[in-house]
Image (cartoon, rainbow, N blue to C red; front, side, top):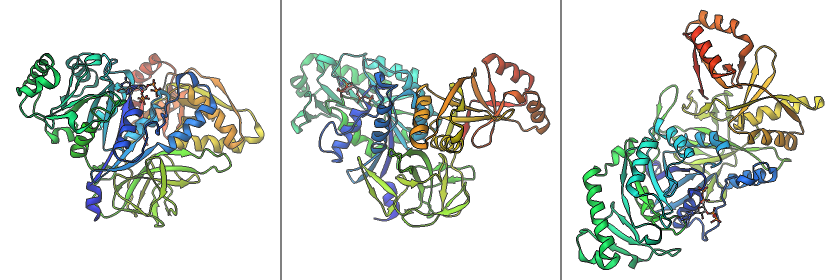
Length: 526
Ligand code: G4P
């Protein structure tokens, strides 16, 4: 197959949801359809169970699982599907944001009873900013939940999406009978925990057909007719271009655990979801069809085995063709680098690949060369945009508790920061290091991993900070004035960027008033 056909048949996407909405279950069903796994239960949830948040072995175990399930590739109807897994635990939200930079579209899973939850709002916000096409799957229809119309309103309101139902539930909970596939004009009847059979599908182009009454009962049939009429009068016709622009989000209903409504969504997904899209770099837009290879690292995963400290860098291919044993330019390090064992992730199995195409993710064994956001090309200087760092929420001074292991501590901290476990700021005034994280869990992870992987130990000291703000100012004089007046509160991040550490919202407001030409940002792009 030629390169352009390879690109066109790729679908690289992520599934996002609030924990427990059914992301793992849905992923598993998709893999079953793709023949990538044979039995249910093969995909382990990578969520860290609530009760185990301080159990280090659990963290280690989860890290192992999440390597295996970081990327799951399978073939379905001649398409190559790449699912990128995203951690559900909120303390790892940054990991998820970064993974979302490597997808071309997303599926959002919502629990019919719980509706739109906090984590979903945040993640969809990031997708909306980037105009990522979104499909919504409303899950757990076998349980009592919110009214379908109310839910659509809630999704529009809370997620800021314009929705368009492409399937519609017939009843819910005890009375759940199936879904009407508006996209294909078919009624699919529900049988719990069963496989959908051919005879469960009723092709029905005309809803007034008497056959409908026989299948689901007159009452349910009348309700369905009425609701579909409302939908067709309220919502516009499906327009694929509007979906691809991120302007409208198709909605499907189903029950992942019963494998119901999943195939309908998958079939529609492979038809409408985007193949690899253009990507922005600081220099120019990169098109996947270009001859020359380019890609960026969006995730780094440390090896579980402390004796082998190598890591896996996850590279998203953006253009051209990636080939094994070929020299590529590592832009940040300004040197050529080649890979003898790049791996692809077919479901939970890893295998060495000779070539890979835009949309694919390859794992590169790395002994410390990569940082999140690094770009590889055939020679052109490019820097992919859009890999964000957000201001941490929690901060602590980190102290070396074993002076004989200073070198190990520094190396360990640097490498953990490259992996994106947390962020580190070095105070300009006294060189003290402050670690900032999204959740408290990462502090434990850092301490544990420093000891186990680097033989270094650290302890923490509280520091009262509200936010880290990246500083920008076009007026050099004003910047120097600000720097000399606020020296005490300034630090450098690991890229050497200037950061103002605000003690409180009030302090930030005052500083902003005193230095109106200085910009304070809560995010930085790597
Ligand atoms: P997550 O990855 O989004 O966190 O969710 P996950 O798939 O782990 O699903 C969370 C729980 O919801 C699981 O139950 C799962 O079986 C259940 N679930 C998923 N889809 C459906 C559905 O369509 N209907 C119903 N009724 N339940 C569903 P659990 O008890 O937490 O775990 P398990 O013991 O079943 O594995």
